[in-house]
Image 1 (cartoon, one colour):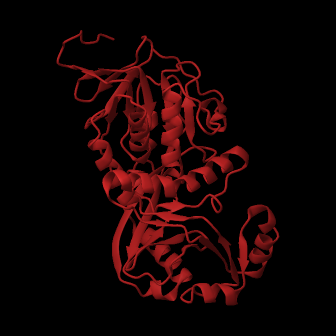
Image 2: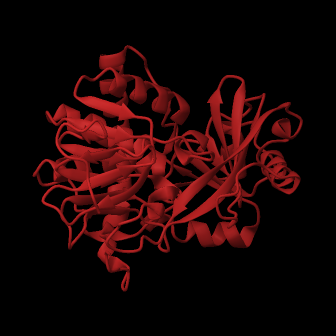
Image 3: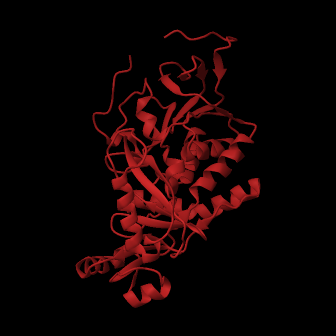
Length: 376
C-alpha cells in the first residue's frame, strides 16, 4: 500500500490514539483518554440503526445476567453511573436523568414464580407478592408476583449521548472527523488508517469501537464475530409505572413524566433497519401485559437499532494479542449503555500504559478460536 508523504494534504495526524466509532463507547473512550492528556481523533460515520441512540438505556446486570468476572464487570459498570453522571454535570452543567429505583421482573405463572424464588438467594433479588407488587406499582397488570432487583435501573441514553458528545467536541485535545474508516494497516511502527474520503491518518494506537460495523473494517488481523441484531422499539405517551419492568420477552422503561419506552425484538435480519407491523404488535402486547394503562396509551414514535451481538453476548475488550497497537472496544451485544462508560475508562487506561481497574481477560478476542486471519 502506498501512503502519502509528510506534508501531503491527504495525510492527517491522528494524534496519540485514533478511535474508530463515535457512539457511546467511542465517545467515552475519547473523553477518558483526553482526561489522561492524550491527543485523540474520533472517526465517526453516521449509520442508520446505531445502537447507542436507539437503546432504551437499561442498566440491568441483575436481569440480563452474566457469570463470574463478567458479572462483576457489569455490576461495576452499573455502580459507576452516579459518579459518571455527576462528573459530566460538573463539566457541562447538564444533569442526565438516572433511574436507580430498581428493576421489576414480573412473573405470570406459579411454576415460573417458584423457579425464580428458588434462585433468589444467589441472585440477590427481593421477592414481591402480588399484594406487595401492587402496593409498589398500582398500575401493574395481572402477575403472580415479581422480583425487585435493587440498584438496577436506566439512564436517559439519548441525553447521555448528547451531553457526552458536546463535552468531547469542546475538548481541545479531541478531534471528531466525520468520515468512515475503510481499512487499517498494522504492519508499520504506527498504524495507518484509510478513510472513505481518500485521506490517510496515522497514530500510535487504534481503538475499534464501531459497534455492529466493526467487522467491516478491512485489514483487521482476525475475524470479529459480531452480528447486527435488530431491536424494534416504540414510545408511548403515558408513564403509569415508575420502575423499569420486564415482562417475559419485553420491557418498559419510564423516561419522563409522560413518556415510556417499550422494547424490544431480537431479529437476525442483517443491517436492515426500520420497523414492521408484527414488531409493533409484539411491543404493544408487552406494554399491555405490564400495565393496561399502557395498552390504551397514545403511540408516539417507533424506531429500531442494530445491536452488535457476539456469540456469548459478552463484549470484545483489550489489546489484539498479535498487534498491541490495536485495542478492541466492541461487541457489547444487549448491554452497550450499561458497559459503555466503564469500557471507556478501562480501554483508555490500557491505551495509556496503565493497568485497568478491572480484569479484561474474560473479554479477550482470543476466546474465539480460529479467528486469526492473514493480513495481505
